[in-house]
Image (cartoon, rainbow, N blue to C red; front, side):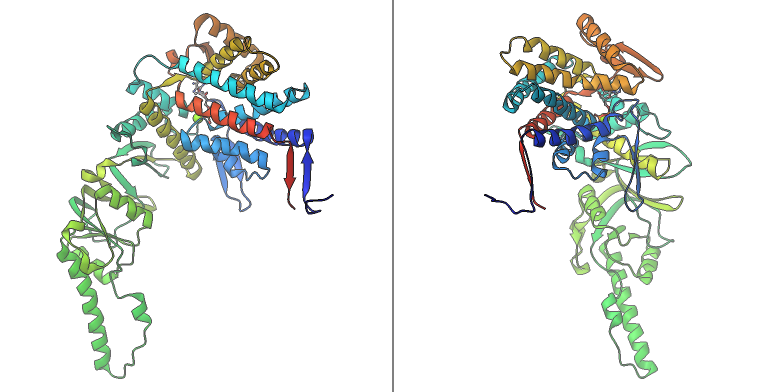
Length: 514
Ligand code: ADP
Ligand code: MG
């Protein structure tokens, strides 16, 4: 009896399991070589020829346009990792893929899917306990925060800037937005400016937008600014110009021109009289209005984007006004300084100080488009991990040390677990080994030798990671070398990888409509 359309495809039993597992593994395999300080980059070219060069797991998987539904679930692991904690996206995908690989072996040994799922869940609980045991005892101070930021950027394409100097700026930015209620991560923006001239990072106490003054003779800097943010066209509305006038004498023409002139002057005077020194409007400003306002010493930015308008409003406390006659002093926002700066072909407006300084912008100059794009991602990750570490006050050793400790604890506890579930618990530990193994492989070491040495060092010293410093690779305590990751990044990776892998393993019937 057929209950489905003849066109739909159905794969069942082991075939379904192994097809899903293979797809999931393939995704993890795709990002494996980018893991760690010596991870390589990928160049992704889309059908339109757009090129993205990146080392970031989430970005790679996102750009890869993956269709297979099980593979898509691994992509989601890295997406949720990015959303929740901002880093560890490659780690999470690689662990998920290896959990699937280990599950495949178990299925071949006739371990039932539900036993695998139970074992994996139990092992992930042990993993979380192991992470808790690895958490630092010392308070998370600025030094540790810098190490967290630097560890997340080591080996990333940061152009001519060192991870160390960037980490310093990142920590300063996060400290700036720390409040009694936590860390207002959203109040930190990143603005990168392409330009070969110099590599420099600066923390702007406020926001930076891509705009230039509406008129060349306007002031380029205004102190103690009263800021109006308008959604008003300052000029004769385009609609009016299209209207037809029946003009049949010079007098009538002159009258029409005078009427327009006085309308335009009216706008200019209304703005000037309002008392604003700086005006941002999302609409056009007539040249005659700009020229008049320039004469009055007022700085105007026209046609600003909606999101820029929103940023200015939230930074300066201004209220957006939709009609000039409604504009009053209470609508003004404030900033200590607004300045227009020119960088080669680009003009930027800086809104700084006063109320605006509640937000900060990491302003980075240098490099080409591809460099600044990757730099922006690296700084974004660093801001996220520093915010995460500061919020929870918990960091763990990086460089594979935490994973070695997790696998060790799981193997220890597996001994007390009865039946076939023990196999699944042990398999989970084997899957976690992928992190130190991959770090070793990506630094040109033999993964098996490295794993054996790391386990031995963990046994005798307690904390052992595969530390990469410049050209050297050594086994040592990562805390001693400032290689640290937020505990939450590790937790999230374990949880989201377990969730996706167990979900995929449980599927034994794939029904696909044509
Ligand atoms: P992810 O997308 O998972 O964050 P990364 O490519 O950023 O992947 O690599 C993160 C891993 O690199 C973490 O396990 C981190 O501890 C490790 N790591 C960072 N710096 C070093 C270092 N100097 N030596 C060894 N490992 C490092
Ligand atoms: Mg990272």
